[in-house]
Length: 110
Length: 118
Image 1 (cartoon, rainbow over the protein chains, first blue to last red):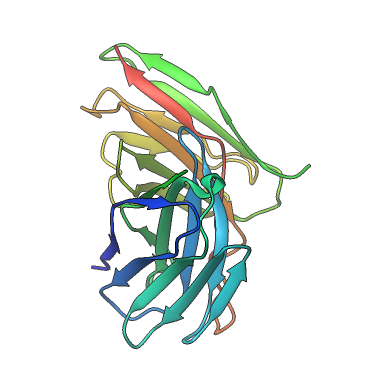
Image 2: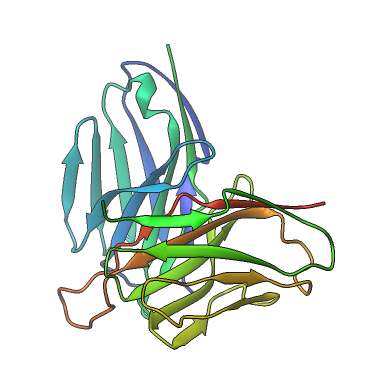
């Protein structure tokens, strides 16, 4: 059974600081997705990572995938308040369905 | 504009009632999914369908039922057998799950339905 673990679950950070969210998973996969969810809203697709060593960047967010370590990271550079949201990683398993992590609730403080 | 719509946005159910949540997409996607999200938690898969007239149980299908009579529509019924149905329900769709090294399953989500049992 595929298990996906995110940490930290809660993250408060000051504006302008850098931080990394980690997504570990338990079985082999080279398909990993990052989503953003604002309070009370739906999920918005951020990144699709499709191979070992894949790196994607959009604005202050950068995602990477290490399939050998079964680890993906979401790095936040010089955080701003607009990045406050919950971030989910999802891993595509052998049945091609997605298993989601519990989410990281990010709060960027002024 | 292409997208996924869900209705209603809020739904209240009395104990013992069945209720049906609507999900429609005009993205021409073959695959559709239903997830449940409880406060502070991730998403759990209820049912999914890869093609019209076919669907499979996800991890938490008990107390739920679905149909897929049209490509665009994938309604979810929450039956009275579901003992704790209060949650946020999200519908998603994706292109057909093809095989091969280049395939992937990026899912796109609707706005959600918040169901509360009174």
